[in-house]
Length: 391
Image (cartoon, helix red, strand yellow):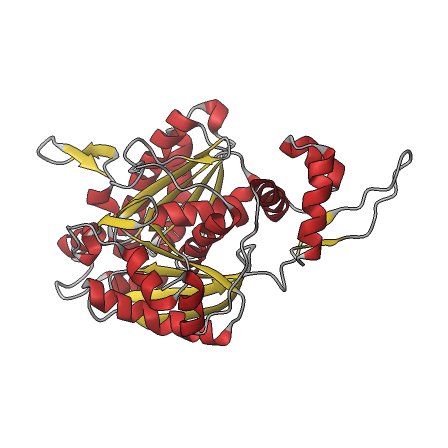
């Protein structure tokens, strides 16, 4: 079955490809960095003036771009900035998978969320996950025309934005061709990525990371992750595992063995410590701890402060190595860090060099909206021609 036949059979409105490399280059620059004149595009992209003139004409005729009010200059012809058409442009679906929920959003080509759906995940087999994703995806397909792609993110190692190599939280130990399986069901292009990598890309392209050439993201939740953007590039590493293992050492255990950040900052580790200290009963979990922290219960606050110190030590090591402009804190347990924020910032200040103490600390919400939007952004990247990484 051809791609067009698949789209017709599933009721998906086809979105035309952007076209040539030059068209993608112009569209991508305007998408990420905002309105520019043709002469500015020529200088920025290294394209000839006739090429930019031809490409922008074609994109205007295709309703991909629209002109803005001309800017009068003291000398020479007025500048006529161009920008992408967002409100009539292509839409994208982002799906963030956790161990027990599927968070789905639909966004514009600039990653602005239009709608969000959250549904439970009752099982983690491949078939169960596919069915759980299809429910919100098919609802969005029915409600929104002009869909151009789907991005899926989950905790695990992913190859070429297509194959889930393994996913510990889902219990997947063997490779799963998740992108191909979902494409066969919905007739739209699908890309898959590690959830932290996807979120960092989302922050870098359209979120708070746009303000910085270099920034680092630390997330604390079921797992612990560290993502880094240096000089405008998301670092993924030789094995595409940079920051994904939670193995950053932040101390020693009582036996003198190295203590990794995941062993003190993951949800299971925090709950276990709270239970050992009598803050939580054996049958209580992270939600009960959050409630106690909100009530300012002293012993619970002490658990949050211990977490903040350990995360700050990991952040300090990262700052020492990559020297980012900002640290972004996120994850479903970020509210515990917020409750202990003076401890986090004080520890970070005490353990960083004097010249790095102007580091900006930003905090995301504990919701999964940024994660799901990040999944949509990797689909946007595919649409505008960001090449997938090599294996």
